[in-house]
Amino acid sequence: MGKYSLQLRVRDYECDLQGIVNNANYQHYLEHARHEFIKTLGLSFSELHAQGVDFVVARIEMAFKTPLKSGDDFIITVTVKKEGIRWVFLQDIYRLPDQKIVVKGKVDTVSVIHGKLANYEPFDKIFCQEKA
Image 1: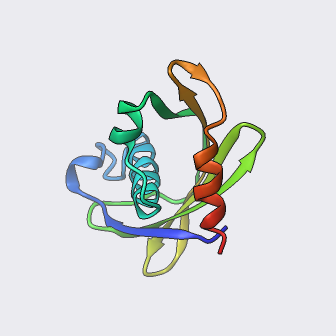
Image 2: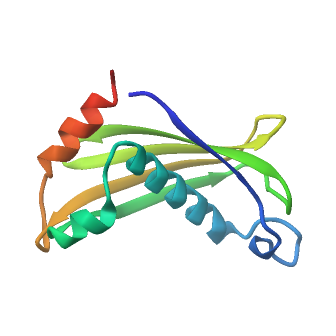
Image 3: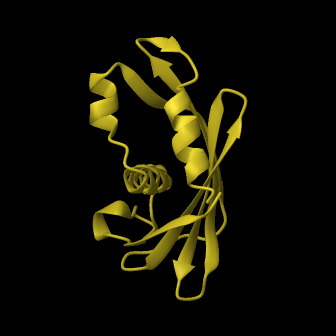
C-alpha cells in the first residue's frame, strides 16, 4: 500500500526537563498521523463509533533512535498492512531537514463491533483501494 506522511513541529510543552520530547508524546504523534491518514480515506471514527464499530489499538512497539527537541520539524510516515484479523500500521518519525530516524513504530489494531472482536470488511475494501 502507498505511504501517507504528515509533517508536524515539536511544541515546548511536549518536552521534559532534559529538553527533549517526552517518550509518551511520540505515541500521540503516531496516533494523530493514523487518524489523519484514516480521514484521507473518507472514514470518520465518530460515525463508526455511532454504528457500534471501533478500531482499537491492541499493541504498540516503538524503538527510539534520536530525540526531538522543541521547535524541531518532523515527518511521520504511515503504511498499513493486513495480518490475519489485525491491521498493522508501520509508522516512522523522521527529523527534518536531515531525515534522521527518530522513532520506528509498529501499531497493531483490531476492529471491535458491538463490543466483540470481529473483522470489519469495509476496512478491507477501503484499505485495499488505497493500494491503487
